[in-house]
Image 1 (spheres, rainbow, N blue to C red):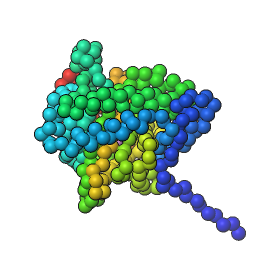
Image 2 (cartoon, helix red, strand yellow):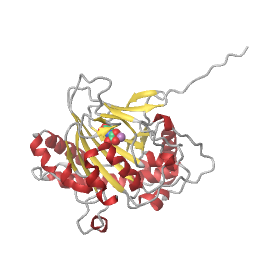
Image 3 (cartoon, protein in one colour):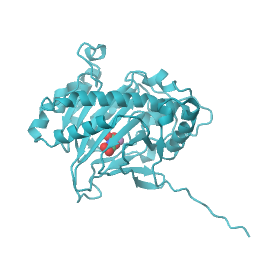
Image 4 (cartoon, rainbow, N blue to C red):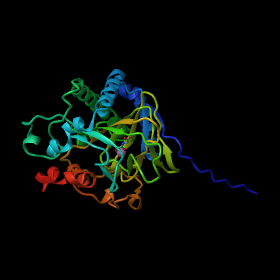
Length: 343
Ligand code: OGA
Ligand code: NI
């Protein structure tokens, strides 16, 4: 008599990957890291990285200055309010102003991007999401700290995209050559106020997927991030000196669903406020995003699982087109300003 046992794999923990060999470009060992990336992207669409080499002092400074900013009264924070950023889509928004899946999020935050002068060709051409940042003038080190952090993250983004390319059996410059040599950079600082009595339907940020190729998230030590794994919702708790990385819709599209753009959400039930620092490393605004030609790829469409039912695989056009389509959903009031020049 045979005893058939079906052992189901549990997806209960977001994997942790030491990327130091990728960072130092130790050639043969990069492939070991790439293998781990492939496994993580297929199983979870999420992974932690350690051994990334990003300056800890810089991170502490960023966290410290951000606490200082959000602790101020609302009038002071509104001095750099988002409507002043115009179509560059920069600045501060108060709690409840940003929508996810059509509902207001319980978070406030500041939007940043690559710092571009007025005479930059894309700014002159009034391309949405390009322009100058808004920095609080009463916290002098804020500007240089954010700019320095974005520079470090951009470098890390290039390194990780090389690792992701290797993980797919592609040459390490595959994404750089086609999409990310001049990436679209979005950086946000969020503050999730403490709210121990939130119900199941109230979220810091509601369930969503990210839009681009790669998100690199720094979170403080409070916790509250949840990831929808194949086994259900699991926590992605803080791990000292790590970043949480996840795959966005464009990489899902490029890999035809092999790498999943995984839903995630945040609820801060702790007694302190929670800071998070998502950095979005995305394709160039004007580049058309196409599937990677691979013979053995398994198409895995997840249309039924998306709140807006818009499958990324049906999308045709540039990354900018895709992103602009999202703006009107997350900030309806900003729609007019950001899209003015695009319509
Ligand atoms: C996001 C996001 C998670 C967090 O900004 O897309 O998922 O912890 N953020 O703030
Ligand atoms: Ni997200």
